[in-house]
Structures are given as C-alpha cells and as structure tokens.
Amino acid sequence: MAIQTVASTPVPGQRPGTSGLRKKVTVFRQPHYLENFVQSLFDTLGDLTGKTLVLGGDGRYHNRSAVQTILKMAAANGVARVLVGQGGILSTPAASCVIRKSEALGGIVLSASHNPGGPEGDFGIKYNISNGGPAPESITEAVYARTTAITAYRISDAAEVDIDRIGSAQLEQMQIEVIDPVADYAELMQRLFDFDAIRKLFAGGFTMRFDAMSAVSGPYAKTILEGMLGAPAGTVINAVPLEDFGGHHPDPNPVNAAELIALMASPTAPDFGAASDGDADRNMIVGRKFDVTPSDSLAVLAANAAVAPGYRGGIKGIARSMPTSRAADRVAEALGVPCYETPTGWKYFGTLLDAEKATLCGEESYGTGSNHVREKDGLWAVLFWLNLIAATGKSVQEIVTEHWSKYGRNYYSRHDYEGIDSDAANVLMDDLRVKLANLAGQEMNHYTVDYADDFSYTDPVDGSQAQKQGIRIVMTDGSRIVYRLSGTGTEGATLRVYLERYEADPALHNIPTQQALAALIAIADSVANIAANTGRSNPSVIT
Ligand code: G1P
Ligand code: ZN
Image (cartoon, rainbow, N blue to C red; front, side, top):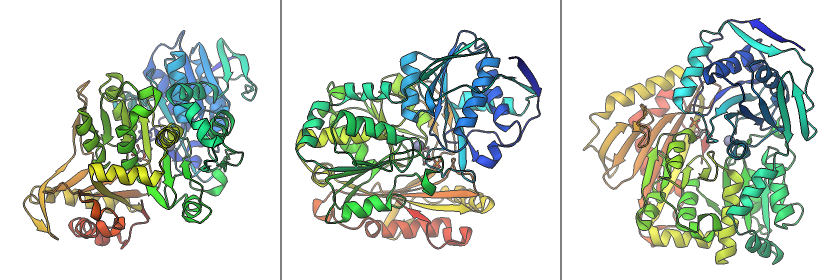
C-alpha cells in the first residue's frame, strides 16, 4: 500500500449549486472529476490529522465506486477515521444525525436527491459541516475556487475496502468503521415521537402506505414503521433501494408518485399515505382523497408541535424558504414566535437552528425538518404526522381543514418549466429585473402590485448575505408570484413559478387550487412573457 500523488488539471464547472455538486453520472465518471473535487474539499478543510469524517449516500448508481475512491483519498489526506454506512448507504438526514452524534468534523453525502439515477442519470456530492448541515456558501465557494487551481490529488493504491460488513477496517493509517445506517437515526426518532401512541394506532387497525420510491428511505421506513411501530408488513412499498430507482423519478410529488395518489383516491385507500425521495430528506403527506401541500404541512406541524414529546417544551421559531407559502407565518404569529424567511436551500437554516432561533423549518419543495438534525427529514415528517393523528384521533383531512378554519387557507402552487434553454431563461429573468421598478401600483387582473423586488437575504446570525434569490411580485392583499431558476438541475434551465393567495373565509376553502390561483397564473405568464420566452405554453410539472 502506498500513497500516490496524481497530477491533475482543473475541470471547469465544479461550482456547487443549491445542494452540492450535481452532474450527470457520465460527467462524474470522467477521469479526475470526482478526485479533483474531493481533493479541493480536503485542501479547503485544512489539516485533517486526528479528524473523523462520515461518508455515505443514497445508493444510486456510482455510489459504491465513489465511496471507494473517497475512502482511499481520505486515507491519503491524513483523515484519522471514517464512519461509513454499510453498503455505502446513509440517507441525508441519517448522515446529519451520525455527524452530530459522533462529533465528526463533517461528512460527505453522495446524492443527487430527487434527480433520476442510473448510468445515464444524475450523481452528486455534498459536504456537511460539524453541525450536521450543508456547508455554507463560504465553504462551497472556497472549494470551487480550489477546483479551478488544482494541480494534483492524493490517493492510496490500496485494495477496495469491504463496506458490506459492519465492523472496523484499516486503510493506510486510517480507521474505517462500517456502521449500521439505520440504528442511530431510529434511536433519535424514538426519542422525538410518542412511539407507544403510534404503536397503539397501528394495533387498532390504522392503515398506511409509505412509498419509498425504490430509494434510500426503504430500509429506514421498514425498520421504524414495520419493525418498531408494528405497522403490517407491506405498509412500506418499493422498499428496496435500487441503483436506478427502478427507472422512476424519486421525487415525492403528486406527479411522480402518481400511483400512491391514485391509491389514496380509490375506495380501498388506506388511512394515510406518504412518500420520500432519493436520499430520504423529502416527504409527501396524503390523506384519503386529500393531498397536503408541503407549506400547509409545515404550518400544521408547527401549530401542533406539542403533541410530540421532542417538542413538548414549545418551539422557539419557524423558518421557511422565501417561496414557501406564508401559512407558517400565521401560526408563528399565533404562537408569539418569530418566523424567518430565508433563500431557497436547507443550508440557510443551519445558523438559525444552531442559534436556537428556529425549531421547525420547511420548504415548499416537500422539505420539512427541525433542530433534531441539520437536514430536512422525510421520515421524521411522516412520524410527526402519525404522532399527530394518534394524539388527536383525527384524519389528515380533518386536521388540515380545521387548521384552515382557524388560520385561513393559503392557496399555493408551483409551476415548473423544466429543461428550457438556459439563455432564454436568463433573458426572462433579466427582463423581469428590468421591469421590477415600475410594477408597484400597477393594477392587473383585479390585483394591485404592492411591491416587486429580487429577494436578498442577510443572515440574522452571522450577517452573511445572499443576493438574487428570486423575483417576487407581491400584491396589496398579500398574494404573491415568485420566479426563480433552479439550482439543482443538470440539463438546461428550469424556471420555477410559485403562486400564493390567502383566503380567510372557510366557505371559500374548497376551490380547486389551480382555479383559485387562475388570475395570478395569468399575471405570472403575462408579466414574464413565459410562453414567448420559453416556447412553452404550459408548465411541465405542477405541484
Ligand atoms: C430544489 C428545491 C429547494 C431544495 C433543493 C434541494 O432546489 O426547490 O427547495 O432545497 O431542491 O432539495 P432548486 O432546484 O429549486 O434550486
Ligand atoms: Zn433529497
């Protein structure tokens, strides 16, 4: 065994996006591509002597091979110890949990989240810091800068490590612990939620379907729902993680999880439905004939947090990404706690959670979480809902409609135009920026624009700033249109248009969402000239 120094040259385009570096597998398999990025990360982290890192991923194609490369590079860069999930598996929230529990320097999470997998699919790599959360931009930008100047990387020429057997191994001077990917996470969930009450719920005949979408949440959901909580076998479907997710798009929304939605609308629907994404940090909650929007889910959990033992002491605050609906703001107001509005991406919640300013966080993109880890957490949200159902004896629909009666309903939808031409997308955004200054006061389709701006953010804890985080047009009644370009895609550009309208009157809470938002949708299209700029008359995905 020897440590090699391999000469290399910079590969362009290694700037991490909303959540790490995401590219096609074919890109990651180019010579030196992964190695350059990992070496740049290690160089940025500085002296790794005596340090522990956590390593694992969502099990997608290329995961195992990347784990081997990273282990050999970690050993060559002087890392003392790596905790790696068995089979190279760690869901994103579980990785966060293990980093925190083991007091590691940080962790490397291999995932492209909800993006499709397989040899022609996507791959991704992300660094999480010692609090268990995604590295802030100061670190990701430093890593990126390093990738543009790299001249060599270090790697051991040792044989592959057996990552399938739990136990210890040695690579050069480095200690490797292959750990059970589920155990620490399951133990944490048990502390947060009333498992006895949920067990009684299942014992009483409550039925549920959890769709793991052939992704990494399968083993976690099986162990916790069917194992620890006594849900009948078969509750978790598509439970075996596959390298290509069975060819499916492992993104839990009503479009990609159409089978679950159809089941929940059928006469044989179980009481409760849920799904999670590629790396198990997203969640979708569905009742019988009733989908819950992620924004509403955050608000409902915040309003009822005290049902769960882990939150009995109350919540200190709520944080939501800017495009997420303001349903949570109303709950925060009623609870007398602050509600923070951050740019899109979980990395912006880290400082607020660390400073105990926020306890619950959420994004409209099927992401919900809390201070228990520093990532969003799909199964956590599902367990929270189960705890809530067990505590109240109410159905999902009853819980949400009663919430609306109390707080009003924030009608909400996101329209995505995927895979559009990048230049056209930039033109659309630039044109909008030019228009912003003149929008205030204009009347459109019975709405009057209150203000329009490009969202910028100053972190209330560390003062760091983020600009150009989404263009918003806010009406005098609080209704909003937000435009953003996706930072996670790997092909062309994706335009996201977020639409929100508040309705206080319970008699008007049953309008189909797209109908309720029709006037705003028309304004969104005409102000941004979406059809003309993108060549698309309709969004590719509506959630
Ligand atoms: C998307 C979501 C965002 C989420 C991110 C990672 O990012 O919109 O809320 O944090 O995935 O899961 P986007 O593609 O919009 O940049
Ligand atoms: Zn994800």
